[in-house]
Amino acid sequence: MARAATTSDPFNAVAEPRRREILEYLAESEREVGQIVVALRLEQPSVSKHLRVLREVGLVRVRRNGRHMLYRTNPQAIRPLHEWTQTFEKLWTHQLNRIKERAEQKELEKLYSKEEKEKQ
Amino acid sequence: MARAATTSDPFNAVAEPRRREILEYLAESEREVGQIVVALRLEQPSVSKHLRVLREVGLVRVRRNGRHMLYRTNPQAIRPLHEWTQTFEKLWTHQLNRIKERAEQKELEKLYSKEEKEKQ
DNA sequence: GACACATATTCCCATATGGGAATATATTTC
DNA sequence: GAAATATATTCCCATATGGGAATATGTGTC
Image (cartoon, rainbow over all chains, first blue to last red):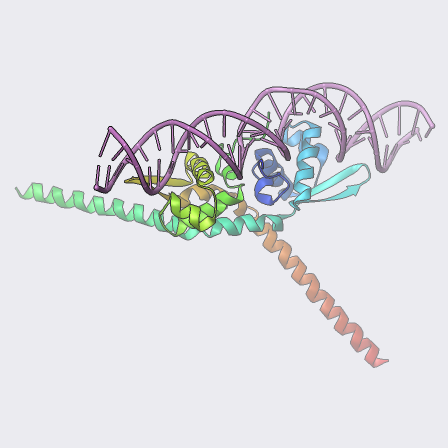
């Protein structure tokens, strides 16, 4: 087997930086393909291909308006990613607290040894 | 250009489902490679290769203990992912509220038309 | 040092990628 | 229906992938 398809799930779809940019841009409001091309300075076929991937995993929605296609981010599709990362949140705040506590401990020790020196 | 390397950033590293499983497993506590092999039912070389990718992007830390290598998840490295997904959180709660409001509106309308009928 | 054990690396391969260039499709306008 | 505009698709290609199999490296034990 090779690497999983970009269209296999949101995790793979979102691994591509340009697709993340597109999602951010389309989160502000509905946009035409041409607007994405201009705003993100990408080639039009490139944008269409990225949009296709995003559409296939449900990360964007489309509707037609005349010759224009209006895309928008479907934020709900990002939830699974958010929830997965959230399971680690407690761990890193815990880790940060430990770092903080150690720093404070060191400060205390420094102060203490200073006082000791001054006594002598 | 082809697809970005799995080692280019946490987004790419985490796109692979087995690597996510490994991160979850190593979040509980420090583990030997052999334990991962057994717990996740993967081939040993496969695990070593995944661990290498995770190590290169800082998602895991290692220390040696005799012939054993002890790996653990570095939760801080997941923060960027969490923060990126978080920017969409407001949008999806907003979206959910709208859905809820519409449902409630429909309920009201249903009730109203029922009363109308009963009048007649 | 010979051996066993734990882990890492290498080689091979089918597969999907993203970009570029060219072209196809769909829609409006005249 | 021809021309113009907006978007999508196709083809080509260099590149990295993950799995499997085999092998290499490192460490403890006798």
